Image 1 (cartoon, helix red, strand yellow):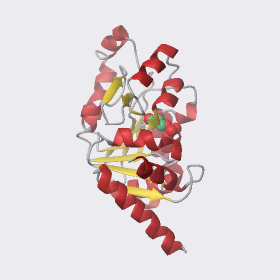
Image 2 (tube, rainbow, N blue to C red):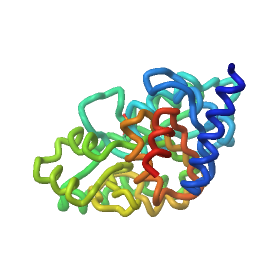
Image 3 (spheres, rainbow, N blue to C red):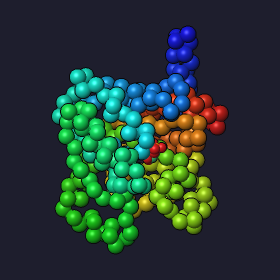
Image 4 (cartoon, rainbow, N blue to C red):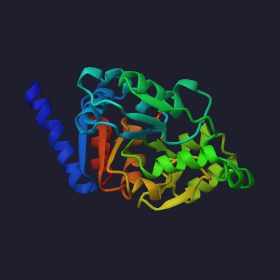
Length: 251
Ligand code: G3H
């Protein structure tokens, strides 16, 4: 029955919450193929966000699921959406700035476009940090009220970034499992590699009051565990049953 289903999912969520020590865990039915992750993430977001808040979103398929489930009638107004990071990979619909624009449309709010690559070489990065437009963006990251983000599997993300075989090998050797915001984490949550990213930094993330992480699927279980081992405690994790079961099995 539906009741059995619900109690099974909330039991899973409770177990994970206790183990991960974060604000809350929501476990949805089914696999990532269906829409339940997006529906639940949209619900959490609508419940928690207030008027006039600044919201930073990352790219990826999980976050891209959310905007179509936002009911603008239920939502607080005058939100500002920004990309939590620059562009990565080839898929235009999965870029953080495109997703920020979809959120803005769904919420009848505004967004700031952010057309930069996600990571830069050392010289370019130095120059970049002197650009007035960039400084404004960095400033917005300091006053961001909410972050919605995905969690990637380390190897998958390295391939998406066209990392060389040497770089991929290095990540393997360092035990990188999970990735978020351009940071790679090992199973204990230690940051084993950090890209010279154009986007929100983990230090800034610590100060963000509302953080919603969205990731599901059995094959992401290890990535989620490794990211969550050092995630900010205020994080709400929205995941699915297959990832949740696998995480508990791995613990
Ligand atoms: O930051 C992590 C990745 O963007 C996750 O992407 O939701 O498509 O797996 P995904």
